[in-house]
Amino acid sequence: MVPHVHVVENGVQVREVIQQFDRLGYAPDHIYVLAHDEKRTHTLAETTETQEVGVREEGVLGSVANLFRSRGDELRSKMESLGLSKLEAERYERELDNGRVLVVAKPS
Image (cartoon, rainbow, N blue to C red; front, top):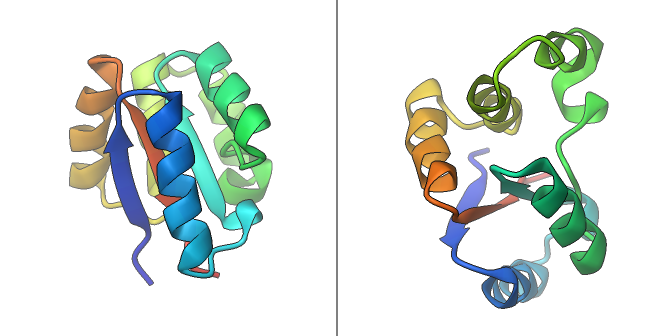
């Protein structure tokens, strides 16, 4: 199944989208937050009790490979591990470059 993606501007909008996903039946462990800045990603995921893309989604090799990638390459890899196509990941990475945040709900 295809993940649902919303592009938002700030933490308030992140919470609103998470509430929408919750109403649609998505569990918090299937909702992911991505920002270009790692600290912002961590803070948003922690405060909204959602997930960061990690070893569970990417696998060990993908996670290790990210240690040697640029942040843009790492973000695209994370998005692809959630089920987005390469073209979608490139498009959304440009949104992240502009300071926006992605909220992704991955079907279980």
